[in-house]
Image (tube, rainbow, N blue to C red; front, side, top):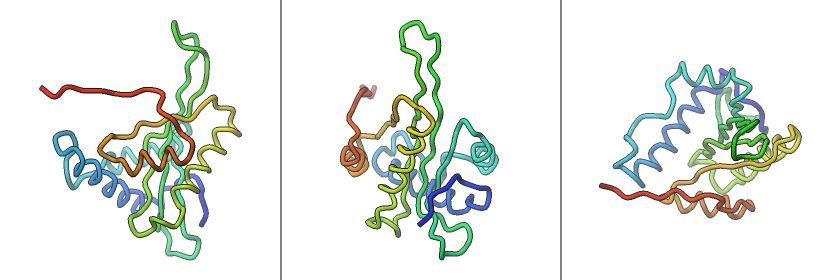
Length: 159
């Protein structure tokens, strides 16, 4: 398995995974997430792949056909500078991690997560953050097993 920055040729595999992760969220919160779609259009995804402020890392099977993506990690660089209440720092926000259903249990998620952490350390980030939906307890357990701890909790009242 190789983990690297996403390239345009990875788009079919990334799109398939975007559909998988959206269905996890739709099944957990159909009041918020639509079914049978994905988070980004092709044009948006092309722009994100080219954007150094929003790196996407993909795990690929080196022996598999081109475009076969086992998993991805979408990241966003957040800079806090001169903020009125927040200290100056750079945060790497993980917008989304997904492992193909067929590749689960093969430590793809762990490898992706560790790659993100190594990238953040190398680039001098203060921390790595992410949000996890409460309707996805498997993801929460995975992130806790990786050593992450809650630092902020979102709450709601449905009206």
